[in-house]
Length: 345
Image (cartoon, rainbow, N blue to C red):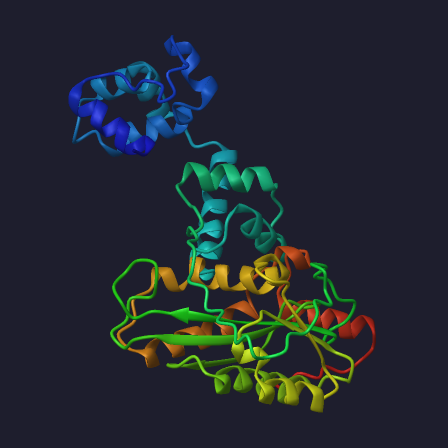
């Protein structure tokens, strides 16, 4: 039960708001453990619900004086409070622009990028007081099915997921999105939708992706062809994936070899060997698709396209890149090294 819900319940019943953890014995001790909201917020609660409950009862429940409440009503708003109100508006704007996926660290860096001077703790405090929280993540279904007859490449990364320049290390994986109404998967009416994606370890950009209603070798080949067409990597690039049959398939391995790309694969039974792709899919589903309902595969595919190309690659702040976007990080790299971008517009 939230603070607001607990307070309304107490106001209806005429009971005190007691410490949820049972640690506070006296009224004067309550605020020490954060069991009550700040006094300003409690006064605002009383003011907003004066027509629902008696003021005396709410003041008693919230451990504030009636005279203090009426004094607060006539007191002019302080400069700090006006600044906080404006900052909350800007926080909400960035929060909505991110699709309600940003927590306080990303909101803070987004405001800094706009030239807004504020502290990280202040942003976190205002978000907490106003109930602004990032969407929660959930687990997703694994799609790895190994063909024992296919040869397996060695693990060339050793869980070191860094790269000094773009297009030298790629990681790849696939994701299953289900059509049932089960909350674990996307609720659509069209059946399964599979997504294959390739991520560059230097910029964290999705450089290739493809979607299909079937998990086949052609799906992963389409994602690889897109990455090769857009990036035109030099020979020597390392491509890492799990041991799924789509990646050990002869056609996939032949396409890698034709472009001078070295194959690398997870160790047996280790998901941590492909952690960057697991992280991307976790963000995709936890921040976005778990909060959407699709009526068809086509609708889901269109939405995923806009998430990858319109939001993730170009607008989402990445903590591993110093809270810049993959696109901005890549442009900064090429400016610093005086090299042209190889990505297609």
